Image (cartoon, rainbow, N blue to C red; front, side):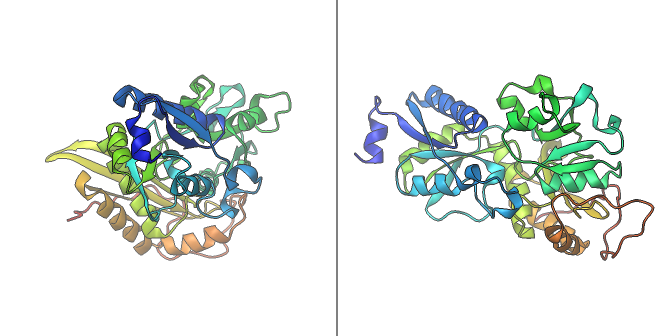
Length: 354
């Protein structure tokens, strides 16, 4: 039976490929339910194990696309009809023969702190042990200069939270994406949702990518009912910045785009940052432009970051250990990065993208 025949047979479910974690299943079920409500087509979830699910190694050592390659292979082999990804896990290069047919409305993209006693980040004492698996978060925690001990961790959401509140807790806090906690109904455990001025999110954090084969026009049309143009635009800006920097999804790069009303209609306000892993130096800049120019806004801001010295930070960050300790503010750095200011406030570079 062809895919078109499957889609034309109302009693035959469409096959949605998903990872098997609780979070992946929750967000895939949301997409399945929304598609059925919008089109009347039944959907079944097909669990697929990825290489990222079976390895305990730090994410940044596993390479690009470790959480999506098996899903894409199944899609190309026509074992499934479409797949749902956490957009931030997707490589920035397009996959031949595949198409992002929908980007549903985004959850809150900010990071969230879960801490013993419900303490806020700035209330944690020096030496507090904070767990995270992302170089981006490690770098920004170190940049705060609060002398935390940052512990690289992996595992699902339950595993990470248990290291703070479980019977064998060994951490004072963990930082997780707020979107994942929301999708699992666990926002009540959040001690603080972190301001992007303190912790800039990962590019496309909180967004989902619904992917199908590019030549499956019926599936493309079905999935288009789930697309949110505003989310697609801001995510395109963030991922364009990441692609232009030639950085991977686990890199110490933050990007956050918002859609706001400007003098001449809606405009995108994009913030981006590259941070040395030890937090000693960073470059933080921003740009604005029209939603139709989202990709060009990201490219332009990436060029601004590189011109301001981000390339030197990028080289240092990729060579640093994942749990690099913050530099003692009283000690001079071993080296300096041209044009990169230590622990600077955000600079704003606003320009036209036309």
